[in-house]
Length: 118
Image (cartoon, rainbow, N blue to C red; front, side):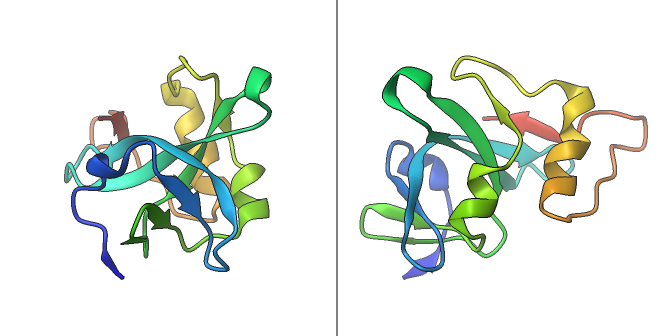
């Protein structure tokens, strides 16, 4: 296993927690606007007719053959803030994503967004 570099290449692969329990499929990456480094992933979860995208931090994420392993437990990720499959994260909802994982949130110096989808 190795640290995830350009994990955009892993889109569509399984996302698992530290116990190797499948959470869902990697859909997209949100980068930190200050550094352009991957910061959160969105993961497809839910029933086939009721899919949604939940956010999970990429801190400590590693990749293996065909999967992305995140450092957060499945139950915490499944309860994370979510968006519709074709939705976008509104700027006013960014803080809730960080708060869910007890991560500090600071918008840019000029109040600009902290996350951007790639």
